[in-house]
Image (cartoon, rainbow, N blue to C red):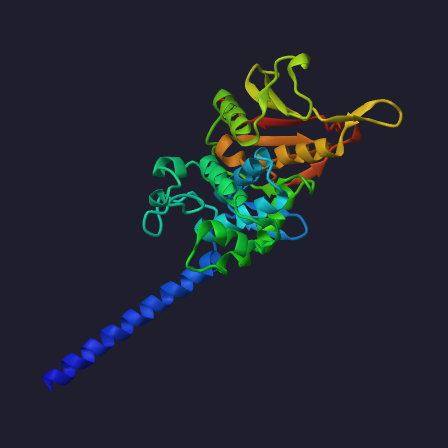
Length: 319
């Protein structure tokens, strides 16, 4: 009887272990599709489809897209990068993962991706991903999951494809192909205020987009954006202007912002909204549209306030 009991107990343990392993495999294959709904999904992206993200995911997605543009990668590359980060980390900058995997793309130091500290830098991780993707012959003609797999070498090579549609929506919005496409509701006390917020935004614009500080008209490179800061009517350093600097001559002979310039304006605009929570942004205005953190959506301004040569951002003042 004792032998039978022991054998039964052993058999039960084996069955439990098999079930647990099976659950782990299913969850790994499903990726983030089976994660519980997250509280506080503060951002909605609408561009031929709709995606909802929380503020951390939105900021990471915006940075991944910006680095792709800065590296002059095709739009398709941004879709692949976002789908990869969706699957690997849920667009979160994770401190760990499977074995020694780290960061947005779950890159491994032991596989030559860099040090853990480097990989935890979203910009570094995105640059490394794009550099690896660029070396894949014919990646532009592959399915999203096949291109991603060539870089990641995952045990679940089909897992990236389920994020292709969401990544396409994000890419269209973050690359400026849609207007007023990113809306985020930001509540609570700002993380940063005043000069600290402006400094964080200008650093982010430099690192993500390669923008430069405004000096003089003669120093502005055609087609390259720039930024400058200003004080409000109370003398507080709360205003940031991002200049487009991409013009074309109209049939009438006047200079107007080019179509690519307007797209660039919406790229910067959506980036600012995406990073609003972490950088204390309370208002963004571009091309006659205004977003506010309190309202969380866009409204049309009077035609007299319309302008497409620069984006205006306002941060919370110091208290």
